[in-house]
Image 1 (cartoon, rainbow, N blue to C red):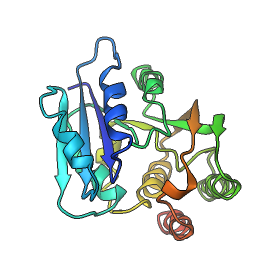
Image 2 (image 1 turned 90 degrees about the vertical axis):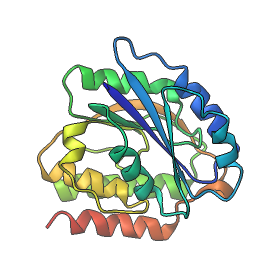
Image 3 (image 1 turned 45 degrees about the horizontal axis):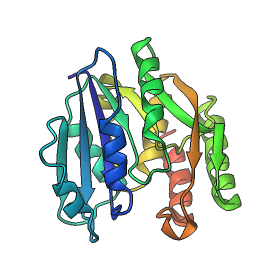
Image 4 (image 1 turned 180 degrees about the horizontal axis):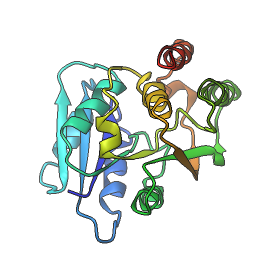
Length: 225
């Protein structure tokens, strides 16, 4: 398998069908690819909607009986995928799947890690606090690891599998994002950023809290030393 697209999902009944429909309609010329969606213990109709995709050959559906967190979902998806390239696609439609092929092409050209940066592209409908928090954490990442990272928390990330396999990921929650970035930079691996377009969803549907931001900063510092 050349490419695996891992899609973590938790209570995404309003968007999961459209996300998967868009992802499955993508074209990756010359690549054999699969989609691995992980239902992280959803309590809404996400599981029911996913059931309607069971006959899709390139789609693999994994289910957690209880909600464990985004990190747990991504780790399970990675472990149960087989692509030599691994991409992350969030399931809330904030990130347009149509931009994925552009990121994947950068890997095909020889890059080890590619991030889709909201701040190099267009970030729409992002609240001031969310915008500031993301930029602040990215600045902290750059300072702590002496690197240039404009969007550490982006949900659009693509890797060569050998890079991911060497990280020994441990996080269960949203701190998976800073853990991945911290461990990559500590190994001296360069992150290439590509501008993407992003549209934030309604504030009432955001699952990331101020506490997650504090934990992200702690995670960045923890893995530096």
